[in-house]
Amino acid sequence: MEQQIQFDNHVGETLSGTLHQPELKPVGAVVAGHCFTCSRHTGVLRHICGELCEAGFSALRFDFSGNGQSQGRFEQSTWSKQILEMESAIALMQTKGAPWIGLAGHSLGAAIALLAARRIKAVSAVCRIAGRVSATRPLHFLTPEQQQTLEQTGLVNFASRGRKLALNRDFFEDAHRYDLKDATRSLTIPMLVVHGDRDAIIPVSEAHLAKATNPDKVDLTIIPGGDHMLAQPDHQRQVARMVTDWFRRQVGVSEP
Image (cartoon, rainbow, N blue to C red; front, side):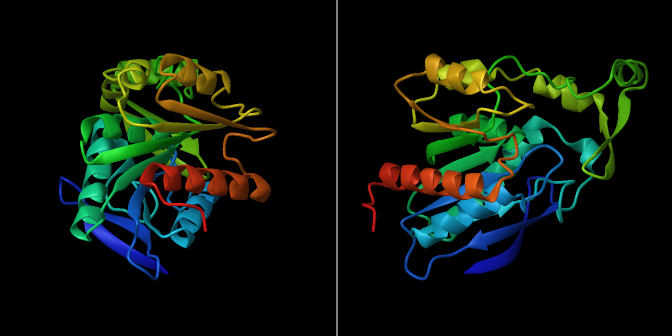
């Protein structure tokens, strides 16, 4: 069953989410975060959360502030703010009696899930889809002219997915505080890394780097022909099954 819900982040902004609840008592809960400038309705997240629900998990996909149907201004986005918003989502699932917590994220959401998993002791496993591991590149989507404007004014305007957006200097300075490779190396819980081998946004080499950085904790799955959004329905279904089977193994639930 899908239920549209709302909950507050750490600064009192209302975040919107879709909660997938199984008919029976859940075996665990997974919180999923979306990619940069996206929303909780991206196809890969919808498929994953639906499949998880079928397998007996509660699954929550939600919009970070300033995205989708959540309150907040996009230009106030930072990695640190989104980590705290994922923490608020985890707390919500805990109030609903979730016996076990896992995290999932796509692209930027993958970075947020990794960093939140390392910070929050209640998290038992994390899945990263099409995520980066090497040095953060928060300026990579800006043209040289836009980078110059940011340096001079502290604010930059850009367009993404049909939206006219802006970010201030805080987003870029905050992102540079985080070392995703170090976070991967120091991770002590299981992590599944999923990546398409035709990803033109974040190369598949990042997935192999994650495995090499922490081979004992990282499971790696490469999707042949998969792009960054895993846009093909067959790829989304394949990823949903793989992710669900992996989370099921982490909880210790046998396949039906």
